[in-house]
Length: 281
Ligand SMILES: C[S@@+](CC[C@H](N)C(=O)[O-])C[C@H]1O[C@@H](n2cnc3c(N)ncnc32)[C@H](O)[C@@H]1O
Image (cartoon, rainbow, N blue to C red; front, side, top):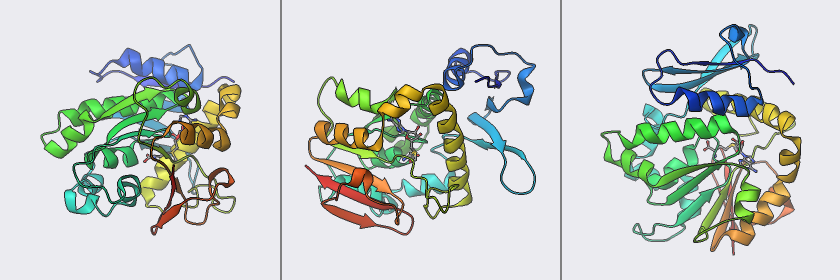
């Protein structure tokens, strides 16, 4: 498949060559030129960091949308404040009733835009953010570099507790080196047949835009790496997660989605926009 893509490096200071490679790997394309401006995907750096532009075919007119991994975005940054964090369902599902000094190692095996795992890191967890789509893994890495320098101590500390791994999590979990994670967190894509654009989750416009970008990137990834995509079924992810985790596996689902891999959880936390299935091991 031939995909046109473009990295705008004019203002980049943070390793444009790596960005180019990440985008090239993502779309399995090895030739770039400034003529590819009618690109499907474009990675561009502005004063606030890297943005991924993608075609927006929803609504009446086709245009470009942009997404970024930005932990300092005000509405997200508010969720990181101590009082708000303790109400986050992902945090409650992962930490359970443990005390505030509990610092588990969490593998977020489906990191995406890293929002859930950054919330976990802000709550004190040490997090490995695993993401198979190289351009997303690149955005996650750059976002950590930015967050480490944030004058807000909570942001900087959370970033210090995260590290990004680019790769298939089924393989990563099977070949895991070092202490096993206490918790494996899974949030694989769930396509509600009735609401294909929003995974069945009740979501804000910004989150829906992220989901559309994820859908496009996933389609490209799976078309270019069909064997890897097939090997990483929900069953395989769930089996690898339950073999590796020490204390539990937490699965985020849309409220109406079926349980992952047909497995009934030990308990559930259901919020307005998502359900968290907890599998105690
Ligand atoms: C719904 S998103 C996760 C969103 C994330 N929880 C957040 O807060 O931004 C799912 C992500 O998991 C990634 N993914 C799915 N299967 C994977 C696998 N087997 N290995 C690594 N990443 C995977 C997808 O590429 C996608 O970016």
